[in-house]
Structure formats: structure tokens, C-alpha cells
Image 1 (tube, rainbow over the protein chains, first blue to last red):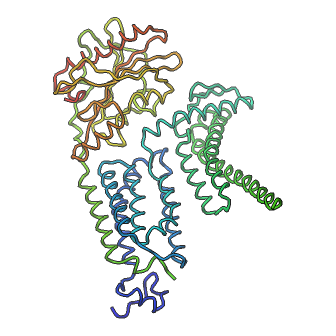
Image 2: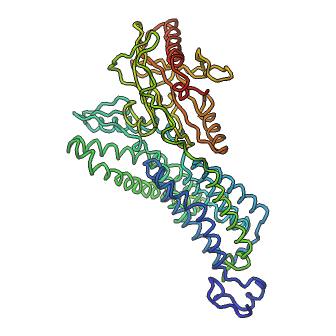
Image 3: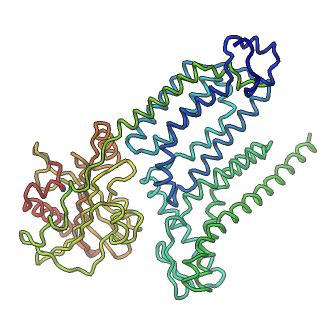
Length: 312
Length: 243
């Protein structure tokens, strides 16, 4: 073991002096990293597998895997950034780390064995946070907070809460669509979540309520904010809040587009391929709205800044 | 330069310990997963529930029953996918017609529970103008406790429904979602998968009915349920009751 082969992740870059301070452990970190990856895979691959066949296959939670992938990508990207910089010196917190990890594992065992995805997926946060504490300490964890916050969106909402929130949102979207279409002169009427346009009756479905798209859009918007790294806190907070009405508007546009397709092209068109297409309309309009709102906010922020400079 | 991915931070012993903890948790989760109830353990409600009992006799009714899940508009749609058995019938005693709805799940979990009528009605745009606990005039458990359920009045436009129901989850009559969750969890950790059933009796009344008549109607509904269960042999009623 006197001459370690230079194949590891960082050994190649390590000057020999630093290798000497590392001292006793001459193992390449690739092995420990693989061990950790195996541990996490043993925990969560079965969970992902069963989720892929149940909740993630439904409209309500289809955003789950995407948000999860983005969260993991974000945490990994940030870790690599921190790894490359020299500003942080790891200060592991073994006690806090072990306790967090263990509580996460208990949550996992209960959730996984009892088929409770809220615990099952929820355990990702304490398990990963415990790992970070155990290996590098609280300072690194603090730098990763956004990734962990993002993981919150991966936890599926319990069905009863979804059902409770869905109905008022459905009503609000139907109400908005009725008024909008009436305003531009279409023969439209509404009873609850049933919209009558000309000879056609449209039932606003759960997916149109926008609860699921609200979460994916909120996640998307927050990621956009974090990646573009806006300097203005006000602008960040405002945009994060504005994503709620943006999501509503996008859903409204989707329902109106569907109603117009049905009205002009017939029932078959509205229910067929074009119905799937309306999902695309939703995301495109939401993205455009986010960019537009962000543009307006940026202009306001810039104007405020110049005014402040002028008065100073 | 590398600050985080060093062999100092990622000590082999530390990572091996984490791996073994993860493997232990993963194995424990598998070991603690209760086996589902066999598919043939439940009796077919369609055959178990008589078409005539006491003063009641099945009638054909044009009225569509309210959904048994919050996602559907009508009881006929989709309930079959959510539950293992669904039964819907109307009965008349000459004076009044009541609707009976049963929804049985052989393997309940935190994700698949019996949907509470409160939510199902609210999801269809109904407003609950009354939501009170009630004890059915019937022995609910071996210990002699009554069946605990609820009385609801649900209203939407001109349709007003009186609903009396109970939900059995495993060994208890559950009056809240939290109670159901905790019981399913407790049973699950002991290695049993709880089954459960919704027994719902409802009727449509005029929105202008007097309070006195409403009380009478509720009492009749609950008597109907009690008579139904009392007429069944133990082997057939066990799916409806926690005894």
C-alpha cells in the first residue's frame, strides 16, 4: 500500500504533500462513493419502482420523477462546485448526522413496509441530509438547502388533501373560462364544473384543476430563479409568489383552448389527439408567462435601482 | 483541488457503516411488509345481501346514487377500480325509498382507503349543511359497543340528500381519516392488512322538509341498516361489522 495507484477521483490532482496529510486512509474515494450509492439504491430503487407503477403514473403526481431528477441533479452539481472551491473546510457532525440519518431510516422503514409514500419519499430528505452532515457537516448542508427544499415537491400529497384542494380549483378554472369565453362572444354557460358551449358539454376534469401543474410549475420557476441567480431578493420572492396566478392562467388558457377546439372542430377533436396537445399548450403558456413576468419585474427592479442612485 | 470528495471525508469505514445501515433498513422494510389478504377471503356482497328483509323489498329506482370516490361524478363510474366490491341497491318499505351503497376494500393502505362520503359529496359540489355523529341502533362489537357513524345533509341546487353511514376499518368504526390511518398503520406494523367497508344509506328529500320529518327520515335510514344486518347470519354480516 506504499504507492497508491493514481486512478481515483482526486488522487490524480492531489499533490503528494496533501496526500501525506490525508495519511492513513489510502483507499480511493471511488470505493466509498460506490458504497454510499449502493446503500441509497437499496433503499430507494424499490420505492421508485412501486411509485412508477402507482402514483407517478397518475396525472396528479406525474411531475414527481422529473422534480426528483432535477433535485438530485441540483444537489450533485452544487456538491461538485463546492468540491472545486477551497472556501469550505469540511467539519463533519457525526452525532447530528447519525441521528438525522437514523430518523430518516425509521421513517423509510415505516413508509416502505406500510405502503405510505409520504413517509417513504419524505425520508429522502433526512437520509440525504444526515449523510451530508455525517460526511461534511452543517456548513455544506447549508449550501445545499435549495436542493433539499426542492425535494419537498417530490413528496406526494395525501389523496384526501388533493381531493380537498382540487374541487375549489376546478370551480375557479371553470368560472374563469366561462367569463372569458362569454366576454369574447361565445354562447357559453356553466353549472358547477360543467361548461356548455354551443351544442357541446365539457366537464372540467381533475387534471384541469391545475394542482399537479401548479407544483411542477412552482418547482420549474424556483429552479429558473436559482439557476439564473437573480441579485434582487424582492424580484425572486415576487416571482415565486406570482407562479400561483401564472399556473391558474395557464390552466385557464388550456381549458379555453379545449373549449374552442371542441366548438369549432367538434367533439372528436377535443377529446382526441388535441386533448394531449393541450398539456403542451399549458406548459408553453406558463413558460412564456414566467419569462414575461420576469421581464417586467426586471425592468421595475432596474428602474428602482436607477432612481435610488439618482437620489443618492 | 478537492475539498469534499477526499478519502478523509469519505472514510471507508464510515461509508461501509452507512451502507450496512441502509441495507438493514431496506431488509427491515421488506420483512415488516404485511402479506395481503387472500382474494377469496371475502364473501360476495352481491349474494350476501338479501333482496328482501323485514318490511323492506328491493325496488328499481331511476335515481343515480352519489359517487363513492371523490374523482367520479356518479357511483357507477370508477368505483369498481377503487374497491374490491361495490353494491348499490334501492329498497322501499312502502312509505319511503332508501338507497344502499356498500364499498368494500379487502386490502386497505395509507394510499387506498375507504373514501369518506363527506369528501365524495363535497367533490361533486355538494355543501354539507349537517355533519353529526350518530350511533346506529345495533350492537357493533362483541363488547357490546354501538356502531359509530355519521349523519350528513348534503345539498346541491335542488337536490338534498340525507346520508347515514358508517365506515369499518379493521376492528374499529372510524369517524375520521386520521383514525383510519392510525388503525391501518397499527395493524400493518403487527403484520395484518386491515380490510374495510363503507355502509351508506341515503335518500333524496325535498329541500323544504320540516326538521321533524328529517329526524324521522334519519331514524328510518338507521333502522333500515340495523334490520339489514340483524337479518344476516354471522358469517355474512362479518364483512359489514367489526365483530
